[in-house]
Image 1 (cartoon, rainbow, N blue to C red):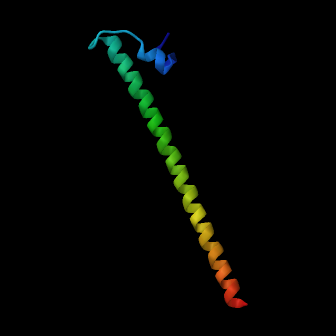
Image 2: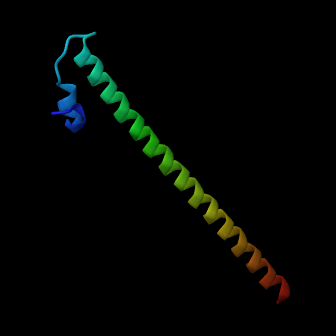
Image 3: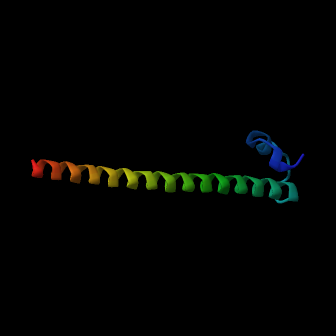
Length: 73
């Protein structure tokens, strides 16, 4: 079985002496998983920022329309 197919718990239990190739591969697999998670978090934050900006613009337009409505009447 490839290390990619292991769950995090299974990967943590993979044996190997410090400094040997199995330990190196396990460490690299953990780093790859960590980078994937960090990328997913960054993408989610970018999407959230977009919707926050869109909401702020919507509120600004709404307040502007309301102010014009009050000014006209």
